[in-house]
Amino acid sequence: MPSQTIGHYSSHKHKLLKEFDRTSGLTKAWVVARYGKEFASTLKREARQEFETLIPEIPYIKGLRAKAFNIFLLVTAQELAVYKAMKKHGKSPAAAWALCHQAIRLRAAETPRWKRWLLRRFMFSGLVRKIMERRARKQQKVRFGDFGVEYVVGEGDDFDWGINYLQCGNHSFAMKHGGEAFAPYICMSDIALSDALGWGLIRTQTLADGCDHCDFRFKKDTATQISSKTPEVQATIERIRNNEAKQAVTADREL
Image (cartoon, rainbow, N blue to C red; front, side, top):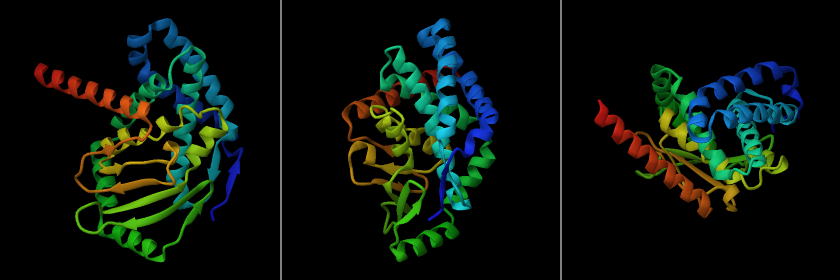
């Protein structure tokens, strides 16, 4: 099992805060439009302070195969910082997640189209499928720090390949650092990522929903289909999706 350490990011604090500030800059107009300039300024400062406090506590998992898990943990820490700052001002977990969702959309949009195309092509390549088939045949439960996964390969048209998360380091981190009410929303960050990167992610349950595993299924050329078994989270997903659909229609009419 790849080893996990705490404190690794302490020496990277300046770089991580710089990235946090860049994301804050991208979402500034969105926050101002909804809450005003004064709250936007306060939130930026307090969320940054929360993130700085969390940095030494973010787990780091060694090994090349753990790279994606480390990226997800960093994103989770940023989102948790936003949630904790907004909670101080009486804002709901749903409101905090709406901002985090927007932040991921804006950051993902910065990834060049050619790079997104290459990532999508590789993800659904014959090579990746062979690797997943080999891992699935072994029927092994693999550990990466606080993550525990097993691999599955689709048969027929349901999906190409998938991963069951039996343990989730993002969920563990959120629960450990005051994000109990926010944990189910953190899982929904995959909506914006799947939309932007073409994952074709289909998921019906998560550990944060109280299920025994998260069922990630990936299918080429398929729209993202993510739902939550937590009613208030599902309602938020539907509300944001409806708003985005209306905005898209308005944008088309203006062209």
